[in-house]
Amino acid sequence: MAALPLINSERLREHHFCLAAIGATARGGIDRQALTDADTEARGLVVSWAKRRGFALSCDAIGNLFIRRAGVSEGEAAVATGSHLDSQPGGGNFDGVYGVLAGLEVLESLEDAGVATRRPVEVAIWTNEEGSRFSPTTMGSGVYSGAYPLARALESTDGQGVSVAAALGRMRQRLPPCPSRPLGVAPHVYVEAHIEQGPVLEAMGATIGVVTGIQGLRQYRVNVIGREAHAGTTPLRVRSDAFVAARRIAAEAEALATTEGDEARFTIGRFEVLPGTPNTVPGKVTMTIDLRHPDEAALDRIETAVQHLCSTCAAPCVASMETTLAAPPVHFSETITHVVKEVAESLGFRTKAMISGATHDAGFVSRLCPAGMIFIPCRAGVSHNAEEHAEWADMFAGARVLASVLLRLADANEISPPEQTAPAKELK
Ligand code: GLV
Ligand code: MN
Ligand code: MN
Image (cartoon, rainbow, N blue to C red; front, side, top):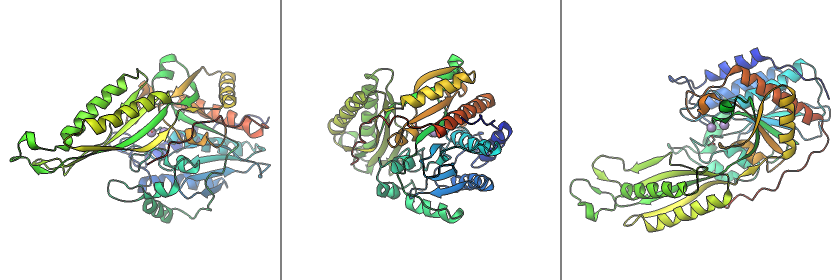
C-alpha cells in the first residue's frame, strides 16, 4: 500500500473559514439552504479549488456534484466519500461541510504527495441533504441511488412555490458548465466523514465514531381541513377549527411515540396555520412529522397508530397523512467498519462503535455499494444550531482516518457486496 499522505491542516482550516463566510448569520452559524444563491456560491468555491488541482468534475440530473482524482486504473469504480454543503436555516458550520472538506483534503493530500491509487478517488457533494427548503431530506442521494423518483424530486416546491427544477436551473446558470453523468453509477465503496451531532463521543472521550448504521427515518405531511369562520361571531361548539384538531392529533401522536421507548424520536418541526389571521378560525393546518427509531417494526407501529388518530380524532375536521420519506434502518458494511476501526486505532485514536441518530447520504449510497461513516465529536452534541462546534484536533483526526481508510480501500481487491436493505416504502 502507498505511504499515508499527510493532511494539510492549515488548508483544511482555511477552506473551513472560507465556507463559513458563505451564508453566515449574525448568530455565528450559516443559513445556506439547498439550491439558494449561498449554496450555489459555496459549490462554486469548492469547484474552483477542485479545478485548481486539475480534478475532474461531473454533475447529475439532481445536481449532485462529483470531484474525481484519477486512478491508475480509470476503468475501475471509484472509492468515494462526500457529504453536503447545504444547511438548515439556523445551521452550524460543520454539519455536512466537514465531510466535503475532509474529502477534498484527502484528494489534495494525495496529489501533494504524488500518491498514485489504483482506483479513482471521488468526493460527492449531495444536493439538498437537509430537506429544510425542499422535501425530502437526503434528496440528492435518494435520487442517485434510485430510492426516490427523480421526477418527484424535481417537482418538490419550497414555501414560495419555487420548484427544485427551477432552482437547479438557476444554480446551473450561475456555475461553470459541468460534464453530466448518469444517476446510479455505483462507487466501489463509500465512506462519509461527519460530526456526530450527538453527545456520545465527547462524553466518552473518544475521537472517532465507527458508525455501524443509521436509525430508520420516516417523514410525513399531515393536512387537517376545517372551515374558516369569523372569530367573533362563531360559537365554539359549531366551529371546525383546524388548529384545535391538529393540536389534539399532535399531542396524542407524541404520547404514542413515547410508548416505543427512549429510542423513539418524534418531531413536529413545521406547523402552518391558515389563513393565519388573528380573527379567522383556522380552516387548514399543515404539519410535518419526523419519526425515527432503530427498529423498523416500531416505526410501523407508530405510523399505523398515527394514521388511526388522523381518522378518529380530527372530527369535525378531516385529517390526512402523507408519507414524504421512508428510509429504513441502515446497516453499514462490516468490512468498512472493521477498516475504520483498525485504521483509527493504528493512528492512536480512541474509537466507539455507534449507530447514527441523524440521517446521512451514506444511508442511501449503501444501497449501491458497501458503505460506512466516520464520526468526530461535536461540543455537547449540539447540531442544527448556530452553536454547533467541533475541535480542530478532531477535524484533523477525522480527515487523517478518512485518508488512510480511502487509501487502503483504493488499492484493495474485492470487498463484500452491500448488505440487503429493505426496499424503500412506496410513496403515495
Ligand atoms: C439530517 O440533517 C437529519 O435530519 O438527520
Ligand atoms: Mn449532515
Ligand atoms: Mn443536518
